[in-house]
Image (tube, rainbow, N blue to C red):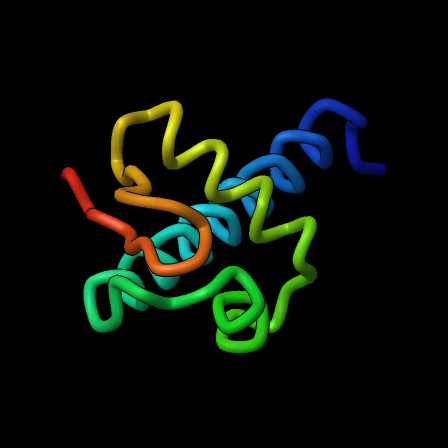
Length: 80
């Protein structure tokens, strides 16, 4: 019989690993193409537009990325 705490910890660890891999892929894509759009990020990472928005918000708050210029015509800058 599996204890609920252990199963929850395993699930949390898997989720954190998946999130970390996704954010790493997003950052790598931005380095390759600073003008990449949210839509293109969603296509490349195979996650929803809302998922991309979530990851971009987290990356901005952590100071990893920032947006330079307007939504149309601007670009991403990887800070860290």
